[in-house]
Length: 190
Image (cartoon, rainbow, N blue to C red; front, side):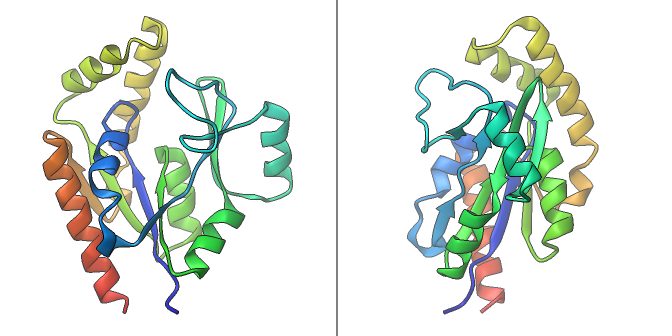
């Protein structure tokens, strides 16, 4: 059995990673498995533990870092986010193409650690549109929104570290483009 690809899917907070992912994830020919990130932040309305994230205490997360159990991790606005390594390796060994939907800081760690990974960076059509999307969530204070926008501007400067950059002006078009990129990379690694 052929080992699965490791696919990094990232971009600034609020760019629509989750929306775009949901539009291409279930396409059978992509054989995707979603790696569920671990975080110390609390669940947002409608998020489910073990589905959207593995919600853990800060102590548990720091133990995982100390025990080298994380493929990547980052701290953002007072919370930790990261990818447990064991689950990713198990899925890839089963032939699944593992999709990591992660923050840019963590993505750069994975790109360095796994040089043959497939990296896709999703960008907003404009910073004004990104602000509108983040504010539209109505889940964060203006201070946190501004922190996210400031961080997004810095992250946009790092897009040249990724193999592919896709603009999310139209989520369906962005999803179709992601699917095509993944399919072509699957075919070239046969």
